[in-house]
Amino acid sequence: MGSQTTHLPRIIAVLALLGVAIFPIYWMFVTSLTPSSELFAASPNLFPRFEQLGIYLEVFRTIPVATWLWNSFVVAAGTTVLSIVLAILPAYALSRFRFAGIAILGFALFATQMLPEAMLVVPLYAIFGQLSLLNSLFGLILANTAFVVPVITWIIKGAIDSIPLEVEEAARVDGCSRIDIVLAIVIPLITPTLAAAAVIAFFHGWNEYVFAQTLISSEALRTASVGLASFVGELSTPIHSVMTVGVIYTLPAVVFYLFAQRYVVAGMTAGSVKG
Amino acid sequence: MTKRRSASARLEGHPLTPYLFAAPVAIYLILFQFYPLVQELYLSFTFTDLLRPSDSTFVGLENYSFLIEVGELHKVLGVTAIYTICCVVFAVGLGLLAALLLDAPFVGRGVARALVTVPWAAPSVAVALVFTWMFNAQYGIFNHGLRALSLPFGTENWLDSPNLALPAILLTTVWQIFPFSSVVILAALQGVPQELREAAAIDGADRLNIFKTAVWPTIQPTVFMLVLFVTIWSLRRFDLIWLMTQGGPIGATNTMVIELYRQGFVYRDLGSAAAIGMIGLTVALIITVIYFKVTQATERAQGKR
Image (tube, rainbow over all chains, first blue to last red; front, side):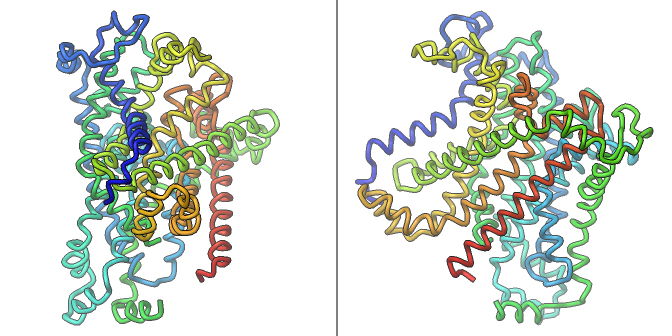
């Protein structure tokens, strides 16, 4: 940790990098607190006007933000639980067993990364129609999980790879079944990775737009992504109100991410560095 | 490797166990990915109206030949190629620079590492909204800045300009995805011996040399993997582009996925939409196969196997 490395150019470069990373979020916040009259002034208002903070209460009265956020939360939480439950056993199988079809499963998991949601949404719409899953948050959770499970399975497999086999052999000798081993030995050892997987799944559900836009038509079941997108190109809602909703939607994600960041990075590298 | 396999054999229980364990994901993927994909493939050989999907007529390869001859497939492919290549170059390049910058020890490094990943956590819809506002002709912050510095383009609406729309979309995309590259590369950098990294940070003269001989060989597999992922993700990116430009103006930002969505949901032509999807998927598959061939060849050349 030499202090001689703190050259001025490096400090400036780091500050510039952080400025670029943070500015659009900061700008969304500043815009939300700028009164309409000043938004269209010749020179921009660069700093937040904290006396305008009342708008953060006002939008809850004028726009159904609370409903949108709740729906997004339900979808994100449901996607998280379902994808983790689904991913653990296949991840264990990919890590520990050699069986016919393992290569196909591995390739299928990777191949899902190539499929655009915008393409599968048409057949999924038809399938969901037959299963009466349209206009249901549960249906949306099922659709999101299909895209999250492959990523999460891969990350969890990476973590299981790094557990020494000897740990499990001892339990095998004692007569534990595979399921017992996974539940009692493997899961406790990979909790940081499970936390990372949970964060990734939650984000996917919270941010997802295409399925929420297409598979849900009821106003009451709108998610925040679709609600916010409905303001694009629409002129009757003032820009500072739109940006306020944007901040309310973005901030929980960013704050949650900053808290969980350590786990996400650790979990992802466990998956990717092992290769 | 052999030791590991024999240990794994000793752990083996009932021969069906692996299949029972793999079943949940396999069934799920078949139901929600593979079966819809097969349906798309079939749709691509039919004429099907979005509003009357049950009266579809089989037309063979007509959708494909229409796209190639009459449609603007070559233009769409061109925009997609430029978009994807620029995403890879700038997102991975900037990610690498950011990772090298954040790898050296300095006061507040932990906070800086966390903050730099914020764009990746921001929802695409919110990002699209705030960037659209920032690119506004008269009141956008970009043009305020350009006018203040008396630079060109200070009065144009970036997203309405055939020349500036794609750069604007790229700027937004790269801003959103470079943190992912930087986090992954930063993790890979931890595999480089500490003394070398410190030396590289201190001694300006040898910095490039150390990077080439010690740092790059360690992180190269990770960077290659990132290139593949950023490529595949860029080929399928929808939200940002659709919300900011819907592929316009005059097709300047019309990537394959945007064209697919327009054919399906604006022109109600599910057959053509599916055909574009199949062409896009073929492109992604070809790139993936080339990628694995190249990485295998490099690994053999380096004598890793």
